[in-house]
Amino acid sequence: MARPAGAGLIAALDTQDPAQAEAWAGALAPHVGLLKLGLEFFVAQGPAAVARLARHRPLFLDLKFHDIPNTVAGAVRSAGALRPAMLTVHAAGGPAMVAAARAAAEEFGADRPAILAVTVLTSMDAATLSATGVSGGPPQQVLRLARLALESGADGLVCSPREVPLLRAAHGPGPLLVVPGIRPACSAAGDQSRTATPEEAAKAGADWLVVGRPITGAPDPAAAAAAIAASLRR
Ligand SMILES: O=c1ccn([C@@H]2O[C@H](COP(=O)(O)O)[C@@H](O)[C@H]2O)c(=O)[nH]1
Image (cartoon, rainbow, N blue to C red):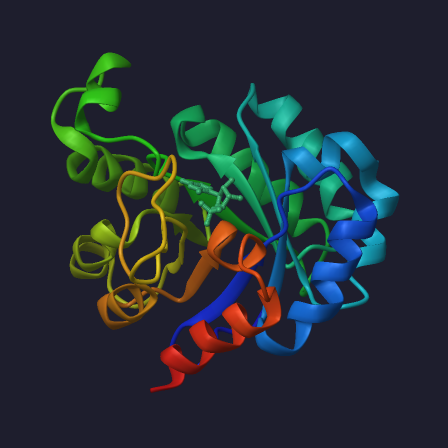
């Protein structure tokens, strides 16, 4: 998948309902670079329904694999058959798991899915992370997991907009940085903790901004996506 000029927009279609996903995909396709489908849709509707949505835009299949290396490699083979542009694994699965995901993706040849490693979920603040036994706070843990994942073959990272400058300073322009936790001014944060506006995330150096509820929960989702896309072009 070619890197966008500036920051590109990805719409997260978080629903179990195939008719809703289809309606969003059709309405949002002119304004976004990719459509993101996650566990909610995949578990409810399965691979065939996912494949149908790829008629609108390339897919980011965000299933966040986290298992032993052999199992993750098999899952990447299964998911890769849907020809998504990008797939996610959890960096916390360790170097062998990330390397196994990358090796399985390579089996799809030149237009293989990019393997993105999720660092620290954007819903987690320092206290939540500390409760899982990780000391030092999100920035330090994101940097630790990013290094592990990139050295193990990940093409890019999922991180919050707050860590983008740190990751660019540490790893330069190479890694694809895909960034949820995006909240236009006046949008409700909901369960997201480490947030920024689309303009802030783009200025920090994100490649792709992932936006769900601020688009899908808007009275006119297409207009909301168009407004965010326009703000990224300014
Ligand atoms: O750390 C992460 C990783 C993935 N996500 C996903 O992004 C979208 C965000 O949706 P919003 O409605 O804009 O909050 C959602 O599909 C998450 O599963 C994330 O938020 N944080």
